[in-house]
Length: 258
Image 1 (tube, one colour):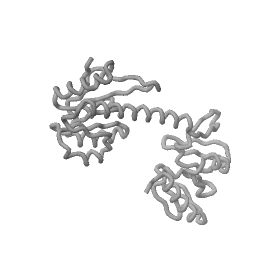
Image 2 (cartoon, one colour):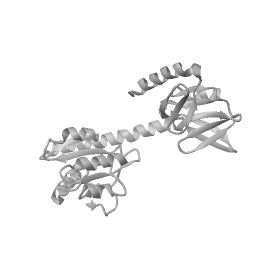
Image 3 (cartoon, rainbow, N blue to C red):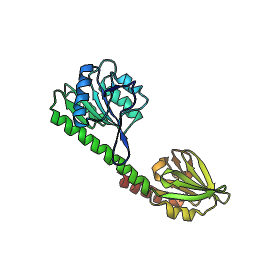
Image 4 (cartoon, rainbow, N blue to C red):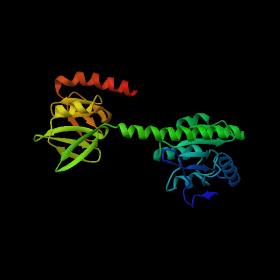
């Protein structure tokens, strides 16, 4: 069964319980149908979503996980479409399909998974699709594993028991004998000791001041008086500045940042 964009979503379920959607975007109907047949020769019971243009794809309510994307299309070409897609979805596995190798280097700029040049052998198509499917499943399983291992802070605030993932904490501060936890979405206060929170927080955090504990992941800039974060800012004690700079450098090296 073939579905176009107006039909229901195409999905199949992995052993991990997650669903996968495969999309084909090409302005030529005969090419879309040919690609559909190729996919169905590998996954005969599954359904595919197709798009006749880059604009149609970008307007879709749900984006596919694996996308076969033609480059040479009227209106938005494949590279332009991929650039817009990346603003919405950084994880999509994009496989460019085109008649020329001229866009290979541009495909790197949008993080393409693969680049198929027409005409290609069925064996090559099958190899690329199966690798993409395997990478999708591995990513899902890895995300599940990370979620299970995600360290969290358990607190009681205003009579409610809350669990806050440490990675979501932008910074914490002491105010009126309480600790205020700042995340990007909310601020939560509870009775506790900053020293105890510091021990729990781990190496991604730094005690810049007796009243502040910051998360290196949210630092945008700093100077000798303050640390600016994606939300708010924290004081830094003068005697801590050099150590903060060294610690932040080690953090960046550890995370592979520049």
